[in-house]
Length: 288
Image 1 (cartoon, rainbow, N blue to C red):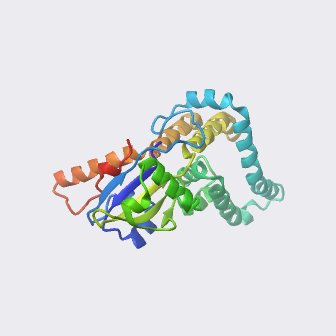
Image 2: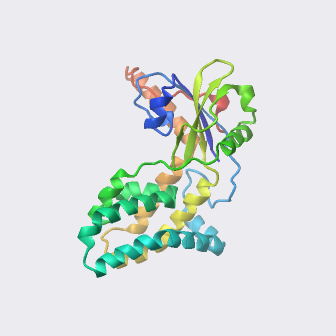
Image 3: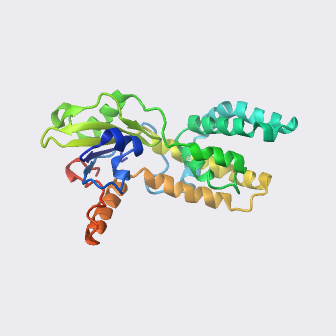
């Protein structure tokens, strides 16, 4: 599982990391960068498919064979959502939906963030789909940022050392004690390569993120027909979930991201647009 990516750059990390969860995603920076990506992580939890290989049928077989996993997640979602759902139903019964819409929109934003990576990704999509979500709530989700609390810094360092088969102090002369940026899929550390003195950004994927995304997509797909029928939605919701799933699962493959980054840089150079660049992949610290 591709979980670590190291980027060598001129590293305006105070601004770059704040404006993008990873420098490799900032393809329009005018500085020149070099990038390295790292090996895959052994999953804490198993998953029905690999990164960039979304397979809803495999997920259906996988989680139906593990009903307690799905039931546990369903219970978690129900627990976190119960208060919000209850308030929305009360608003409808009391005829105060319009008066409370701004407050409920903000509460929905907070709820989606608490529900995790898949909910954040879906929320971002729904923010521009008022045909699937009432317009006031969709508008509230426009403020949704792909950022969550970081996972423990020590765990991130452990993943880096295990998956790159290194000791951090041997490869880096400096390495941030805490991540400088965190997003739903992973987080970023700042470091300096001991061999060259170049400053780098090290992107580490969250443990078990593939399992978590696969589980949530399975549940979305399972309940999609009921949602479509109950809300008279004139959209193939199952097909929409599959389209989302393909995109979400592709994002988890850091080697695909690294390849796309390199291709982008080559394409810009071929067009004579050298001022438009992206991080350069460093194979020695790349995922296999």
